[in-house]
Length: 311
Image (cartoon, rainbow, N blue to C red; front, side, top):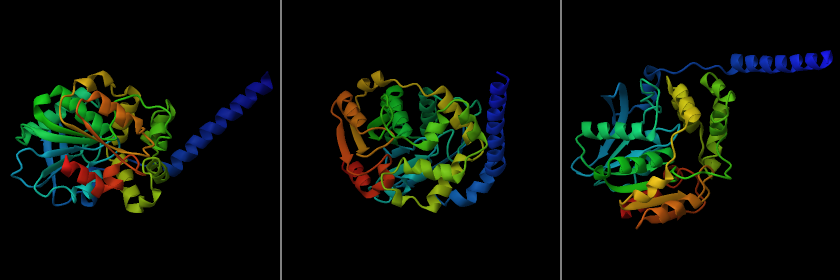
């Protein structure tokens, strides 16, 4: 028994030693907005004081377009995810993208509390401040979930809905992203508050894109910088620990013209979920992009934009 306890002591000592070594080697402090602005803010970027945050957004295209297209990014992403696709969108459209609270250069809200109701309230305030009474709204992944939830909370403010590999239904039997798996693992996920190596970001991106060849150093650096922007790691950890309520039953109440775009090889949210949206939203249209992963607007920006333009 004494030897057994000694072995247990050695084991936990080794684990503690390993954690300390990882902490020393990979510890990274948060990056401030002042550090990140020169890298990720361009002449089309704007900042809006709103709900205790300084919200980063881009308002591009035709300013006379009375019903703009509002685009919402997914978890751990930013408005940059739509930049490649935006170049192919109808030039007569006004296109607005925004770093959502907890992500990008907007960062966390004051209470570090997040829900679909909160995100809907945020978007309502954001659009009101831009004097936009109605819009077309599209989103990818979590952003897709936020978009359709907004359409249920504020149906009079949405004309058309675009869901790109959106959340909404239970997800099963997918390979997923390494970063998301760690963030979802109790106890271990707390390490991510201090240790977020670029290698982890790269491995996570390989679970998101079907073609790993499109992953480059600039992209890895951007995702890494956004991940360690001040307060974002704590916000993400809160989201994964508490979870955002999934309410698939509400999807059947959506009565807006809806376009469903999905990557056939999505490793995070299976393509079968596209059919569930198509089934539950009456009159919706569905398009599956072959050999494309979780972010079609990055992997196939021209094809994705073409579908949106036609819709």
